[in-house]
Image (cartoon, rainbow, N blue to C red; front, side, top):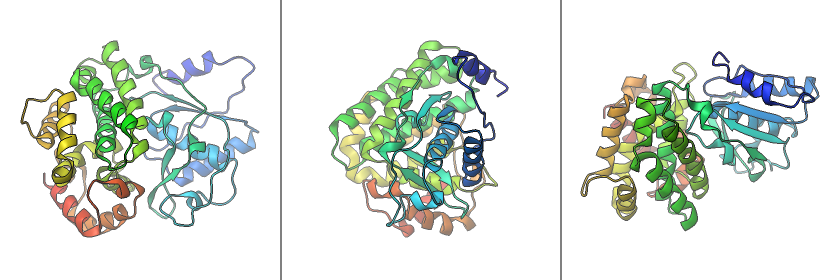
Length: 339
């Protein structure tokens, strides 16, 4: 890692700890990388995983911890399969995020692009890291555009979790606090404007972890659609950036059944009374320098049929406030394409 963060980690470890480093994690982790990293783990008789980096590195680390201790293919354990193989104890895992967005360090899921080309979720409480180390100092060198994109990932986690119909008031309260911390205080905008603002960086790292704690009650259509777009290994689209672009049209779609929750969200975000939540997110995306539409990210209308079919079978679709099918996803993709 050119930022020098990896050296900081290895120099901190006790001398008796021998490390084997895998540093070829793709921006969207795939099954080939999982196989390569697992082979390195086994060839060097490793006995645990330290997942260090952004959400992609953390998700890859979880998948390696799984495949180092389980037989068969990774696809056997994905949630979209009715007969998914059970996940038992995995290799000991420590997670150290260097971005503030995914919250993967406290989440039970890993999202991987399979050899089939699908982007799917592997989920189990056994995949929650044994230890998570949150140090906002590790995010100080993150460029503004990645600070913005990862920050909107955390914001989307909080919003979708709050809007999930699953009854979990504790998780919902955590999500509301995450939004108050990231948007209500202006921390995200401040972190993007000045990466050395330690208070803003700390608030964003806390909000990121809170987002993942909140989505124990589920996510929704934004993530189902984002996973579908993120499987394209040519475009290599950033997950948080996709979430930011997809959030406004999904908010408008769900508004009729989630208006009461939108009011709570608007309050903790300190939006002016009466301001439309979806429009507020669009304004925020603009201030952060993020794209306005999927078309700007390379998605075309010819892709929509495949994307809608993929989103329909995504685990996150089940907890969207309104029922979803491929036709409704196709409509949403059309709106996000030219929004």
